[in-house]
Amino acid sequence: MLPPFQPAMRWATIALPGFVTPIACHLTMTPTLVFDIETIPDIAGLRALHELDSAVSDTDVAEMAFQMRRQKTGSDFLPHHLQRVAAISCVLREGDSFRVWSLGGLEDDEGSIIQRFFDGIEKYTPQLVSWNGGGFDLPVLHYRGLIHGIQCPRYWDQGEDDREFKWNNYLSRYHSRHLDLMDLLAMYTGRANAPLDELAKLIGFPGKLGMDGSRVWGAYQQGKLNEIRNYCETDVVNTYLVFARFQLMRGQFTRARYQQECELIRSTLAKSGEPHWAEYLAAWSSEKN
Image (cartoon, rainbow, N blue to C red; front, side, top):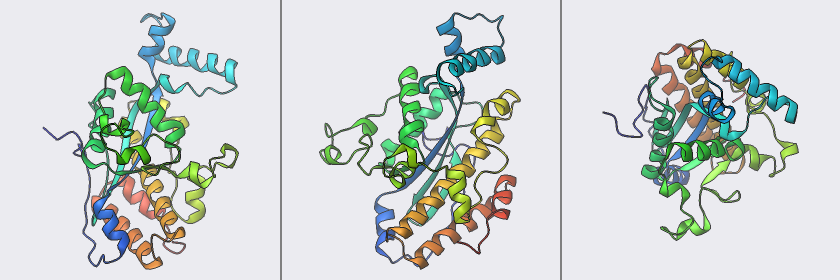
């Protein structure tokens, strides 16, 4: 049986020699964990809240919820607590290694993969990095974790167990243990938010390939959970690459260090041998990076 945060499907690691810069030391001491989630409507929850029996199909339950939401807000985007987590994908940058994988296996339930995510925080106390994680991913994980009885004391610590967490924890918007890149780059102003896909492509990274969040429910209904996980993995690599670019902009990476980082990622993904990474690399032009 795999440990709680051990990649259950696939991951690749490659050593990159010659790290002598201060930032390499920082990475060794504090692993960087970039994460992204994909969600679908919580059909069981919607049935319970609206007293719908099995005579109503899952598709009709979801469509009812979308219509109710459109009437209320003009959008069919469901509330955070009614978003069931279908996939969590992570990049773990630790020491000289780069790993990317989706938590759990195809057969694992929502509670199991959420617990795996928080077990990783318990184990590594990493620097968390996300794109809109403060606005979407983490609130969803909070609500869904509460529903499933998840335990994650390190994540919720605000100085009760570790005094350092009083001044720098995962929960405060302006603390750095969780860096929501979208929020920071927009100066914490929603009207300035940029889509990850567009920004990644403007920099020269692949961005989204063939799927986006609006297609996840349809793909799930067709039994394409593996494709959803692949999509989530490519999105989390996009996020890490934008983070690396941000590290270059703010002086934590030299230009040479940034180029090494890009090459490490390319080399790691090339060794995986999986089709979605071959497609990703084919879309990644080296000229602009």
